[in-house]
Length: 94
Image (tube, rainbow, N blue to C red; front, side, top):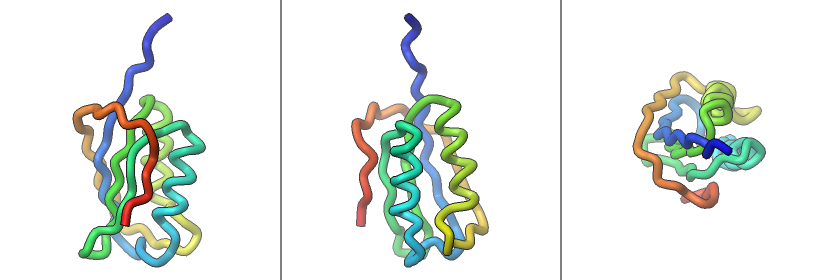
């Protein structure tokens, strides 16, 4: 059986993405897709996410980032592939 190829992306989301439950919704979406990583607010008002998993599920998650939580207004998503870290959970960071 072929081992699953993991992908790791660092993502920055810009717009009205703080104080609108973006992090909580991102964590729920990632976990529903079986992804690992972390999400945190940045001091400049952006949200930073690291996500890891299969190509298909990571792509689905990145597509979701453009929509975000019901109250968010995303203006830009910057996703860059990075080195796989083999993360075990999806953490909500402060």
